[in-house]
Length: 458
Image (tube, rainbow, N blue to C red; front, side, top):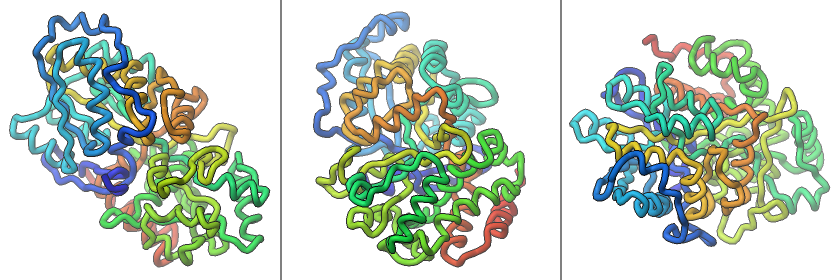
């Protein structure tokens, strides 16, 4: 799968189930990293079968799973079902599609819905619920989510206060990539506050180097990496309550607090002394593919690049990604307080019927047992926010760092805001306007006012 597909965002547009869908890029979809070195054979892993006995005799039953996760990331998912299949006698039939969001709608409307779908967008889940296509999750699933997930994750799988879909995989977006070896050679230390990060940026700039490199290019989805910057900073300057109000359009998109946040982002991305190391001037950010934007770190042309955990797949083969290696990442620091908020995305398991086999499989996927099995059969690039996940079962140090962020009881987590907004905004006007903000130096106030004007009236 290409990095654009790995990082794909797809958001249902406003309206009912039959509306068009926009495909784009931001790490809310396929988060599985595929089998890799050190992955465990699923048939060697044991599962306590007792929790599934209450669903009755399931021998010979089938459960169909439909998802956006395709080759090669699909195989670890398929492998992770083996212990459940051996316990219950259920055959899990997996189908991945790059046209998942559009085709899921078609299948539901034609009466050919799968038993379970992995849905990356809470907005699409809400549309399916409104169409009476999805059934509420059974109490066994809800009990697992209550015990093993932060409450915010349950809320994203709920519609109008009713719980429908348990979280599955997750990705953490609030990372800054850097070179530990380059930092060590220059005597730089990892910043733990925003002010320290800016002071480090000034120190690097004064040395004659560029501290930052960035790129928001992504074909038709150009602009989405800038939305992550904005969302991360809104969380850090205005706080989670204002973030929620902004995403839900309970305050205007151009509220002064959002203007302040985007100007804070501009203090880095529109600062010619800071960017765009190895790639050009400020305007080059708009045309640099996000897949290439961090690579100048490797030759010392820049020192820092903000991007999600899935970016680890973009470094060239043989790159030592470790705390003392060629490349690693640190959490994007807080602006207020001591603990950095965590921005992320993920998938949710929605069921289209309440058959016992379907409910048993839902229960398995919501369990810490599945999360640990999935971690052991996967290579780098997959993580879950399930607090029952043993971080040591993850094969990548970046995935381990992401899991630690998700499991930090003091951390504030929020789902990617533009994935929660109407598609005309989160996958439309916001991308366009933030691209103009960088490419043509369009002013912050006008950018946000134009997005506010584009917000659908119903």
